Length: 261
Image 1 (cartoon, rainbow, N blue to C red):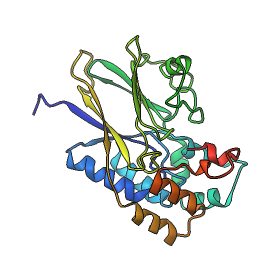
Image 2: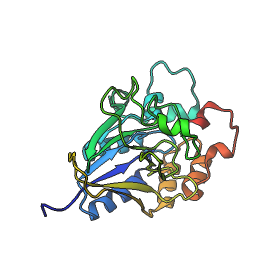
Image 3: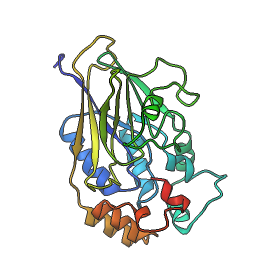
């Protein structure tokens, strides 16, 4: 047992989809993984943000700030809609403050690799870096910024936000990956999470891996829950949960809410 590698499950972008979260956690548990890190966006888009927060506070060793977690409960937010007001009202006492106080990033050492985890980019939870980024954007993900602090620069970066999982290694040996989304996966609507495997805290080289796991779940039960609760923007949520088609592709792409995956 002492020679077994350490494993960390990385989940992100649950977005109030309690049914998907429960399925993913059951899969993580079935693999005997104890360490779970959450890369943000607990709320919005789906109906049960309060329950998702409660579970993640209990189960996740690390919880990181996402753009929705910063934006939705912001007392100075000026843009509003029926859906935003509804999602905000679902939060329990103190949950909005808990979300906005979450750390921006988390650094760790794994098999001699310096790993940094954050939600969207090295500069802000509201700055998006997509899978079709350019070289400047790629290398910017590994930079130390006022948001990440001045620790050793990472050689591996994992993030969420875009709901599109990918894995990329540059010619200079830097590794960038996106976890995809548990609760709001695009294109393939099946929830996805990542397993990091290696020697946690080890400065010396050791086997290291990044594994993507898709977990089927009962999407119709999640849609039924959203319907029962009377959640606004239900048609958009059904499109995303059932078919993986982003609601922003169905309506006005200029609306601010559709740029907050």
